[in-house]
Length: 111
Length: 114
Image (cartoon, rainbow over all chains, first blue to last red):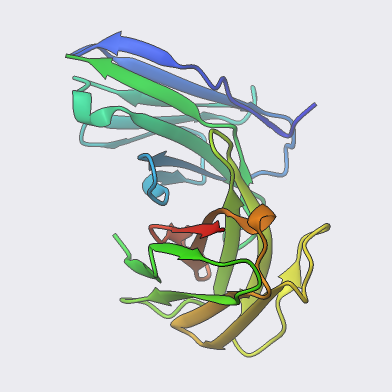
């Protein structure tokens, strides 16, 4: 079993829909949770960073962490074609520790 | 957000050539830099972790003599692929981080060895 599980998709939704992306993990020592967006042939771009259970909102993005269930989510509201990319979740035990990555979910927003 | 610059973005060279890739953190001092390799449609694979002024820590299966890492300052790390062969062709990405801050990534280097 992988430490971090993420459905690779692809996930295809119409423009304007709410997108829900998820990861589950097995190591209860993870304390830091990140979501990165990666466009083709580019490096990952940090979207959200949190270290506590609960919700964190930034514009159209909401990150949710449930440590009791070992489950994290990223919600994208009012999705746009420009949101089409691969979304990677990543976790760490402490703030400067190596990241453990999900497989990445390919998201396609159809105009 | 923080800016990490990686150069060059694309390299095409002959087998046996050594290739140097630079990673710079432009607006913060990175105590730690990471080098990753990514194959098509796969997630990032950590190759090594480097701290300024000390030797890099390589992940299992990564040849330290093949992939030389130098982290001479808090803003610059370099990865040199020595005597590159076609199987070294890949997408190489660096990231920079510091205490209590998430890693920020460069835009990657696409390396093609002919």
